[in-house]
Length: 150
Figure 1: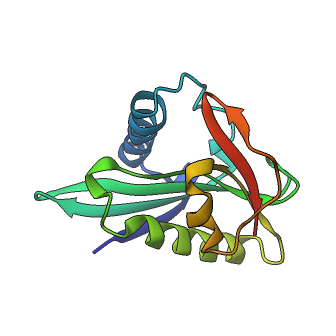
Figure 2: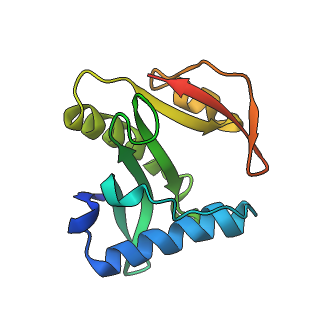
């Protein structure tokens, strides 16, 4: 069972923020071997969706994404930093995360389209949620991405 936490940056407890930043570093920088500035100045104005699970008796961050308002990064609102922690992969939490994130984002910014910069290998996954590719593939930090809209 997943406990979902939807928070503005200022409302994130320090321990939760630390776990978010540590998990983003573990997945995006260490696991994917990408040297990039994860702390990009956009977190402070974003809403954050954290998915907590109890694994081996410990409450851990199993999934995460952030929602940026229209105009913060793109004309459209956007979902970003979408991740499933390694210990939770294969459990379906990534599907839960995206469904929850889309619903919360649409309530937060009704009537706006959602844009994502998706890793190319996840293009079909995002298409299942109504995202349509509108760019040619491009390299971002050594990983091929495509831009998609919903």
